[in-house]
Structure formats: structure tokens, C-alpha cells
Length: 639
Picture 1 (cartoon, one colour):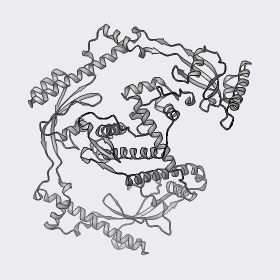
Picture 2 (picture 1 turned 60 degrees about the vertical axis):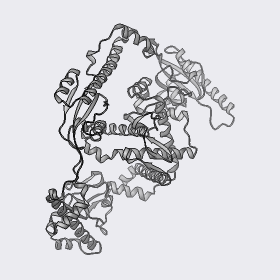
Picture 3 (picture 1 turned 30 degrees about the horizontal axis):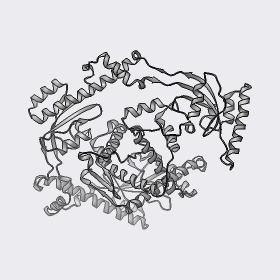
Picture 4 (picture 1 turned 180 degrees about the vertical axis):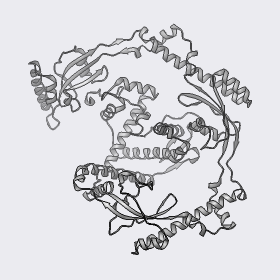
């Protein structure tokens, strides 16, 4: 990498927050100071530090968009509910503040050089393995993020990593733990099992009205009929009106003059270099620099005598990122290197070799392999690009204007036919949904969090603001609303009866399975116990932790690692397992042990994985301790 060559002063060394790297770190800034409306509301306080609605909503939307992109067609309202995204988002923001506050309290800091290194090593900004300034700015512009916001996020990420390293530095893993993990992951087992099916116990369930009413009272939430709404909404795609935009040549030329900097192509060179650094172990700094100078002078003499530059770079260059490539730095342009290095490189022509160049990092010899002079793209060359930009800009502006007109109409009238005609005139898609709840209904409404929120938050007759959904604008009106309600007991008595019997049968099945397991653990032959229960002993094929499930049964094993540590002398799995239609008792039938030779091949990888797991656990526990000491207030109503 070119990390040590980048300019030291703060310049354009800034990144942005965007979805492609949200997995790498999900730490949001506290956001700008809100001005008006709900964004000004405080959703939480952490030791007096507010988390505003704007910060929370921004973080939530980023998480939501990430999961939508990651899951694609598998994303649904049901999945969203299971993710519990709103609670996870606020907890992530709280944890972030706690950790950063503690880092500050301990005096941990991050240098500009560390920020630069992280920025330039981010793969999303690299082209062919090298940092690309053009790609960097393109992503920056596409995401409409202020550079300083991302630089701050990078700084915070590094702070969290540093304090995480400090908190978990003493984590160790024993050889026994590594071997145990190897066994769990690679040992194959075949299990015997018996099943206590719930349906077998239904006939034992006694039912009366008092029991049903009590069950109904205890499980009211199961019988609540959720709110249902019927909405009318309009949608206009941002690019729908591109063809309607008319542009004059004067507008294009005015844009070109105003944004001429966008059409300047800087000088680019492809160069190699050899770096000799002064020794860091030398106490006499002046002497260290003199020795480095003497060393690079000898290298320069050899180059002048005709020795191969790339070969000498591999042998002597102290730039770890480029030395093995023969000193090749790839293409770079003005503004990407430290001043002295850039000035020397840009002054050379193709094939020329520089004299010795001194920078803060040491001494360099530079060879320019290729060079492309800078130029300004002419208006004629840029015209098509300008047209596309302005058409898109004006089309979006026009789409919003038309949606604002439709928004006014929605407030004025409930006449569906009139709204349909006006929508057609404006180029807006108009739709009226049926009654829907938060899980089932119109996919467009339920698939957009802002629309969904408006639909179920607004009263009957309420109209949302204009919702920017990325590619489209929406506006929505609640045509009808049926609030959540609990139906009378008598109305759903038969369903309550079925649920009561089902619930009781599950409890009886579990009780009997646990009694049998207890007897077996105490020494009674499990086969004899199964015979007395009239249960058939079945068995599985051989499987391992890597399979993920028990074949045929479809039972996930990720949280049941003890299945792979069962021994002949202790064959019983110590818990009954609820699965499908009953409770299972498992015990070891046979096992196939992995070899020591296989262990030797992977033990280092396993050790590192275990250390990482332990570090994550310790860091998580440390954050929990910070939470216990902190004063945390959360306004649940605003989540």
C-alpha cells in the first residue's frame, strides 16, 4: 500500500458511511443538531448524552437497507419483525457511546496517519488492489455523505478497536480447548432417539369453561386482532419525467463553466520507487538519516550503471506494500502523495529516474514507467454527461413538484375517481389497497418502513408527507382504520379450546419425557424405559457439526454442541429436545473419531478462531458492565 506516502495534512483523506461496508462497522455519529419536528426529540440518553430522533432514524434506515439488500427476495415484514431491528439499533447506539466515552476517559487516541491507513486499505475504494481517488469521490457523491462525517466514523471505529484490544489482550486458549473444539466440529456421531409426541397426550387433557377462560385471560395477546388499515397512495418514479425535461444550450454551458473543476483530469503517472528509511532503533536520529542517505546513494549508483530497478526495489526497498512488486506503486495523480514525492514524480517524463528525494518517511528513488498529462475535458466532450446530470436533476425536481400537487389533492378530497384522473394527468401511479395489517397486505406499503409507519400511525383521513423512497416519491392517505381489539371470549371459544388442548399436551409430553430421562440418567436402561412407554427406538445416520442439522430430522445442532461430546460411558444427551411434534431423548449409538493428523493441520486456525470468540465474549461482557454503571434512559414510544 501507499499508506506512508499519503499527505500528512488533513486533506481529502475522508470516507463516507455507506451500505457496502456497513457489515465492517456499524457505528453512527451522533448526527447534526436537529432543528425542528420529531428529529429534535430525544429517543435516549446515555449518562446525559442525548441520542436524537434524527440519529436513531438514520441508523435504523441504514440497518434496514442493509438487510433488504442482503436478503433480497427473502426480506419480508415477518423477517423484519424477527430481526427486532429498532431495539437492536438503539442498543448499538447506546453501546457505541459507552465505549467511546470509556476510550476518551482512558486517554486512548487515534492519529491522522492511522485514519489514512484505514481509508486507503478499504477494499471498496480500491481498483485492481490500489486506492482509487476517482472511485472514492464517486462513492462519496453517490451516497450524499459529508466527508467529515465518515472521517469521524473511521476515527471512532479505530478507537473502539483499540479499546477492544486493550480489554481483551489477556485472553488465552489452552491446548485442551482447541482439541475439544476440533472434536466438536469434526467428530461424527450416530444417535438413538425416542419421541414423546404431543398428540399422544391430548386425550389426557381435561377441559372445562373455567380453565378455558383462565387460559384466555393469560394469553390475551395471542387473540388480539391487530390494527387494519386501508390506504390510498400515489407513486412517481424519479426518472419517469426525464423525457419531459427541456434543456437549452446556454444552461449546459453555464453548468460547464460553474463545474469546470469536475471536468479537469489531473496529471497521472505510473511509477516505481525504492524507499530507505532511517533506523528507528538508532538513538542518534541525525546519524540514522545519514546512514539511510549513504545506503540509497549506493543503490542509485547501481541503477545508473544499468542494474534493473525492479530487482533492486525487491531487494532493498523498505516499503512493505510495494517492494515485492518491484516497487510498483501503480497509477496515482496529483494530490495523492506527500508533497516532496509528488513534485519529483510529476516532474519526470516516461522512463526517467529521479535523483534522491527526501520525505518525512525516508529517502526515495523514483522511476516513472508511464505518464498521462492532465487536461480539461472540452464542453463538447462533456455535453452528454451534463445533459444526463441536468435531466436527472430537473426530472427529480419536477417529480417532487407533481407529488406535492397530488399531496394537496389527497388532503382536499376522498373522491377516488377524481384522484385517479388527477394522478393519470400528473403521471402518478395511484392505488387503493384492501384492509391490511402489518404482516399481510400491499407489498409496496409494507416494504417501505416510512410508508408502513405512516399507514399505521395516522388516523383515518390522515395524509403522510412526501416520502423519498430512493427511486420514487410516495404520498399516502389512510382511507379507513380498524383499531386493534380483543374479540369476546364466546366468539373465539372454540379456537381457545384447541389452543388450550395443544398447550396442555405439549406440557404433558415434556413432563413425561423429562421423567423418563431422569430415570435413565439415574441408571435405568433407556431401552427398557422405551419399551415400557411403547416407544420405538430409532436412529440417525452419522453426522457432524459441519452438517448443521441432524439429517432426516432437520434438527439444527448449532446450539447443541454437547451432542458431539457424548461418550459410551455417558451416552445420554442431558436435556429433552422439543422438535416438530414432540420431545426427543437422544443418546449415543456410535461415533467416528477424527485423526490427530487432521488436527495438526487446522489447530492454529482453530486456536485463532477460539481466541476471537473469547475476545468477543469478553468485550460484550465488558460493555454489559459499562451498561450497569451507566444512567440510560430510553423513550420506548419514540422507537
